[in-house]
Length: 341
Image 1 (cartoon, rainbow, N blue to C red):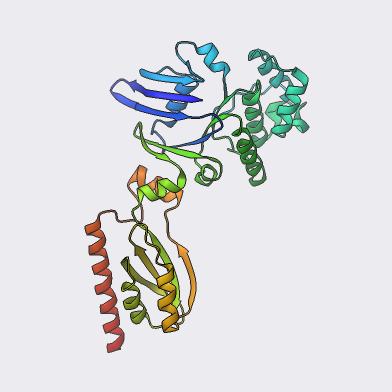
Image 2 (cartoon, rainbow, N blue to C red):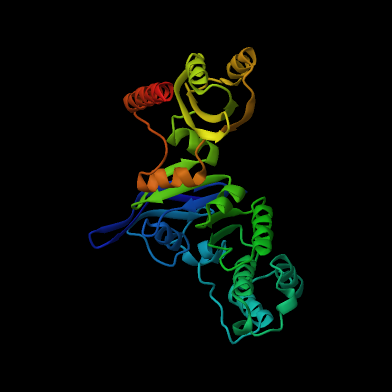
C-alpha cells in the first residue's frame, strides 16, 4: 500500500505540493488527475524517490522513501511519462539489463517471457529499440516497470502513443494488475481514468481538490439532479404541467428538435425520483415521451469545475431560483409572441 502523510514540496516561495495526505490500499487502482502545473508530477516524483520532499512522508508498504530509499524503491515499478529506454539496445537485452539492475530473484527466462507476453513485445524482442514505433517503446517501458513483480505500480501516462486497440489491451492489463498490486495511474485521458480506476484524486494548485469515486465526485460537486425529456405536444401546456410535478425546482423548454417536439430540462430536489410522476402526467395528457436521459455531470465536467471553476451547474440556491424565474418569464414572453403572431 501507499501512504502519503502531509507531503509538501517548496521551490523557494512556490508551493508545488502543499500538505497533501492520502492512502492507496492493496489491490486498488487510484487515478491521479490535475492540470499542468498543479503538482501532479511533483507528487509522483516524490513517491518514487526521484526528488525529495520538503516535509511530510511517503510510505511504500510501510517503508519511508527517504529514510530507506533502496528498500522502498524495491517495492515500486515505475513508468514515467517518457520511458527510460536505452535506444541502442534490443528489447530483450534491455529487459535483461533491468532484471540485473533490480537484482530480481525470479527465474530469469520464464519471468522475462511472461512480462514480454503481458506487454505484447515478444514479437520485437530482438529488435533495436530506436527502430521501434512510439507505441512499442511505451509498452517496453511498461514491461520494465513489471520486472520483479513489484507490489506497487506508479504509471504516468501509460497509453501515450498507443493505437485504440493497444489502449484497450493496456487498460485490461492494468485492471488485471490491480487485483494484486497497488496502482497509481496518471493520465490526461479522462475516459481512461473513469474506465480503469476505483478512486480518483484531483490535485490543483498543489492541494487535493477532490478525492472520491467518479460517481460520488459528480454528486458532491453538483447539487443538481437533472434529466432531459424529449416530448411531443403543446410546449406551454407541457411546461406548465411539468412545473407542477412534486419535487421539481427547475424546468426549461429547449429548442424545437422535430416538428411539434421539444426537449425539456428538469431538475428535482436531491433524492427525488420524478420519473413515475412524469410518466403519469404524460400518459394522462397523451403526450408521447420520445426520450429521457440523465444530465449528470461527466468526469470531464467535474474536472473542469474543480480545476477551472467551469461547469453547467448553478450551485447557489438563490441563483437557481433566479434562473428558474428568468426561464419562466422567457417562456411566457415567447408564448405571448407566438399568440400575437
